[in-house]
Length: 626
Image (cartoon, rainbow, N blue to C red; front, side, top):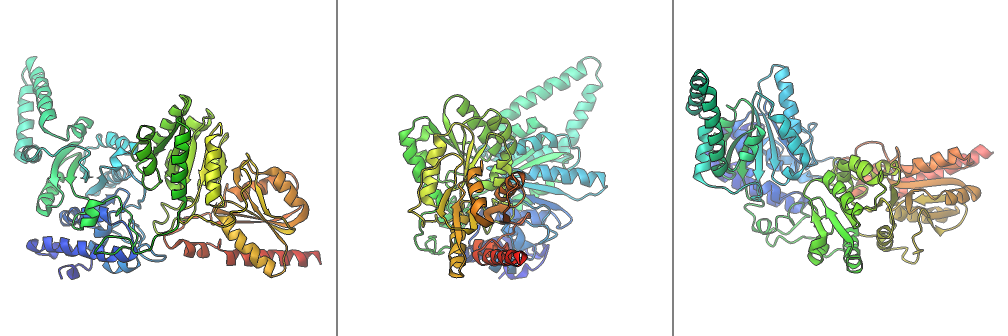
């Protein structure tokens, strides 16, 4: 196998050119086989095999810097930099990340995970290179989907000012930037960077500029005429107008063509966009036909492409989807907004049923929030469905455009808490902290699937900014007999006893129930309370618990700083409550990738760790009394 010759950085440069297509085929087969077992991002990686190979041939790593936007398409890059053996532990705890990680390899120039960041990071690299007197190449790879994010345009606007080489590779796999107009555009792209052409162009301009009075006018007239003609035949004129050179489109599955274009791109003194056309899922028919399904794939059967797992129970996203469709039928003012995640957030069914009331704004969370604010001002009831970690990108808009105006925008926050294999950039462990500190914002979390339904209905009938956060995975279906009506700012007492009180938020109610059962088996009396609201906290309920309990334990799947437990502790301190407290939270840190249950154990928010901590605290309290 050719692939067996790739064991360390730059080994691809030693492969015979005629063997490169076979190497690409072997890499695809390797990825399909490995990801069918571990799960991971398949379609995007199959689409960039030749592109990655061409970059590794045209540039020298780790001296040259390749920055991947999002980074979920970097698997071939990892193979070509000597990490093939790591794929057996891909995205597992302690194993290789599914994203670029600087701590993993010197060839990973920048840690990524969210969209539309690569051009900004690459431009920063290029500026630092120039100031430090270095000469390495900087390449930012960005997909056409990421180009819907405003940050990319902010960066391109700034990149136009650089006078030294900086390369932006636009990986276009959906034909969403421009149509490929064939050989003419390729010819013109190559011509514009050829030394003979650029030299002739400079010579003509210099000669004409020397002609008194009329010379400058002639140069300007030629420039205007040339720009008009280029608008007709060159698909990259948008980039040219921003001040960036444009090369392409080029076949993203033709290694020879891409290597040649990258060599030409290196000659440009300034920022240059290389437009590469690829096919997402290439080489594996199920992924070609259903690229969205194989974006983040679970383990699957290679022959059929179907998931290996049997039909699962409904998850929280499914419940949200069902309730949205039902409420959409009842309320014509309700609209749904997502940032390029109709499938992931469960809004696909709503889109199919109410296409005029569904809005996908692309990978642009900031715009999504302010767009929703505009609709709310005009009298609609927008529901912004977004992953917890992606809502971070729109924090200013939540404050400035929604909460200051006290607008009725519903934030349906999926993937709240630990999400597992995608790691630090995707764990939704900060939302309770960053949302609960905002005036006018109301924050809720359901204990099970029925409460998610009830809370969404409550949120739609609310009159201000309100956030509903729920976890990834199967919806908890116990405690179905506890379904008191949702009342603003009020918690729900599930079991009312004494001594120890467990005050749990959302997903941690399930864990708290298990802890309570163990405590009762050990002879402890224990109350269990479903907090429901993180902001405002139920102060009356806290008052009551402080009266007849000696230990109050808050539980949340969020970092400690600024979270629910912090708010309860602050209230108890301010009001002089005489009750001991334990705050069960995730550490104030970034949690790496791995199985969610394993991560809960490692971060000590599983039932066993909590039980030990409570018993140790309670025994210590009794000894203090003696």
